[in-house]
Length: 233
Image 1 (cartoon, rainbow, N blue to C red):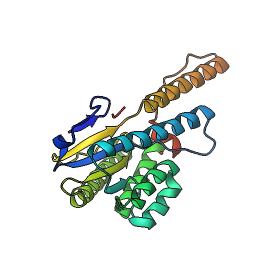
Image 2: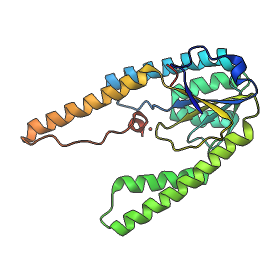
Image 3: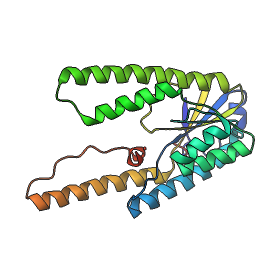
Image 4: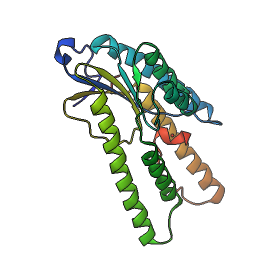
């Protein structure tokens, strides 16, 4: 079950007592050379995430376990890896770790690398439909194995009445155990970032059309996490 903080302004602590809780935060990555508009909205998003996680902790309890997509090591080693990936989620994770939360090894390294490699192949495109289908099938198999692994990590570490914090892609396909209460942290700044990205894509299409004299083509929009590499209002 997933709750949005915007609809649960003051969740009753008693209603979650004894249950496992998971705060779900979507990853937005900063990246070198990003436009000022993206940087501003990215920073605003992470400020709001930090505030809302604190608010949730005050209502349902402190975070005891931290899980982060793309990180395959635990503790200080995992945090050092995370520091290179995303300084915003790193700061939030580090603060919880220093307060006693366990930073868990979320990924299995080889599975994560396999999925990443296959994803890059798919982005390149293929001349052969047979090869394309083969790579898609391999990607689906790898994603299934990876998802099974990370869910097992959460299920085996998050105990009764504990709170976990998970940083994950907005397009994740994870299915959480039914006895875990999931709170999706989706501050207003995420929608603002999405709108800005759509507007920027439209502007670029219009500029390209003006330069060529052709009608602007439709452009597939990446999610915010995709720019870097990669609801509780």
